[in-house]
Image 1 (cartoon, rainbow, N blue to C red):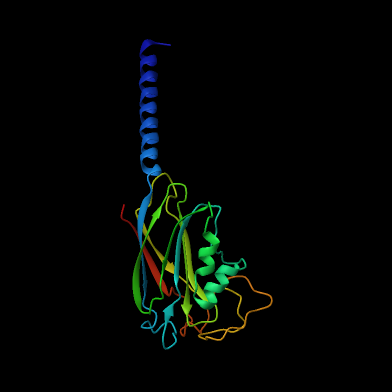
Image 2: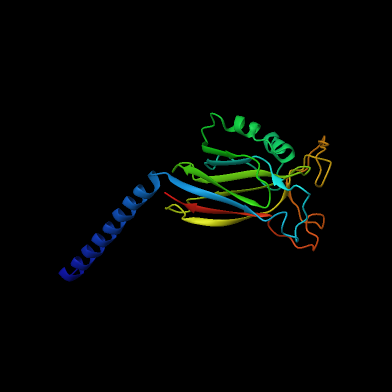
Amino acid sequence: MSEYVLIIITILLLICLFYYFINVETFRNVNINPATYNVKFVTSWGADKTINAPQNPHTGNMFLVSHNVNFELFKVGQFASKEIANTAMYGTVDDLLDMVTNNGNVGDVVTNEVLMAPGEVNLQIKVPYDKTHLSFVTMIAPSSNWFIGFSVNMMPKWGWTDGMIIPLYVYDAGTDANQGFVTEHKPKFLADPISLINNNYLFPDNNLKPIAHVIITRIQ
């Protein structure tokens, strides 16, 4: 092998090592430090005539949590936990708070009071590097057991996501035999899985659309 080939190989190896250590250092600097996000909840429900609403549309109490992959707040197609069922039917978050207390898979927890619709509210939450997922849930009220929520990973790759906009669709928790904008509940003996609501009771023009959005922005 000629001297020139050895020199070229050496240079290439040095370049590879340089970029390796740069990326490792970047990963360390970005990922070890927690990120803080502002989660802005916005809804035009009550003013948007393409979505039916009761006379006094509002949310339930709001619940926002950071967590790792071993924690799951809810999943469409699966049965609602007791905690999600109670939130969806009654708008309370006490059971959710009990569920996450001393849970090693959970980081910060943020709650908020009932929001009258249309309206908006800002929630701020710190997300540690080992609990990079955010999940959110709140009832839409008055209703039988309808709720909205999301779950998202704020670090899909090596670095924190700067922000995103998430549409929020209405789900049926599957735990109430009564349906619609009602205050009387008839808990089912055998629950159904959580499902997306897409009917002309909620959408008079039969066009599915989100009832609210969250705008997530990194502030630190």
